Length: 339
Image (cartoon, rainbow, N blue to C red):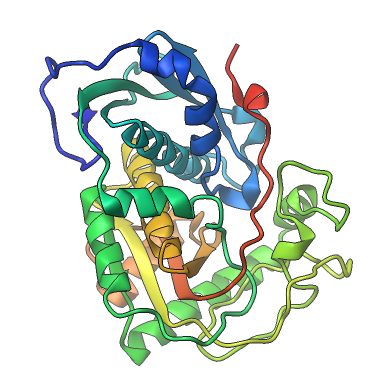
């Protein structure tokens, strides 16, 4: 199956661009792709570059032990795939993507090649510029209103990636969602394996690590706020967190849905997620992400039933304005290259 950036099916015989583009710009392409969001900032992706093609692989060594089927890992890799596509667009070409091209090689998630020439749009350019300051927002929001039309436009970007962003704008639906997540979060908070994973992937204030959740990105204590869904406690009583705990509630809540719940759907969810986030960040709107409460298929089914949603819930997002620009560290390009 082959897709363009807009998510349209294209013919196998689409005129390719020069193969030298990939090899000449390999460092830039992979560095941009690696700025994608990932669960616990695990960055579970690897890339292999050959003339005319970039291959995206899952890095199984970075899969959470609380993610046995690799759902969150593939969502993260899907986000990196969108970043790679946007980087190719910045060079003036249309990327051509083959998802899951070889059923015998489960780690190989996609191949991306250079398609026909097509200038980057002004919106895509703003989204590319937002990649450095896009971040998962675990602290309080500023309380400023989200610019009119931003969430509606984010819905359009999700649809372009074969996903749906369902906005939860009724109080009853929000309360039902909060109830499901609260019950799931309480169970996870007591799970020794989940707590171990948070300790493993949360970092102190020394700033030396190139992966994991840095201390500046989470608060030292979790305070329940009106309108805020239950957050994960990355600090776990260690007093490492440096993000403020108090602030304004989010301006909007949404559930990202895919038509099915397959590996391809998870990759589409990741692409939709990153596409929405960089678009929102281009308007200085950021999101808190909730993926781990949805690890269990039963919880995803319950959310769908309680809220009357059409599709498989993959990620819950809460949007708001913030002025934070501190980017989360990423591993070097050489560290994410497949041998």
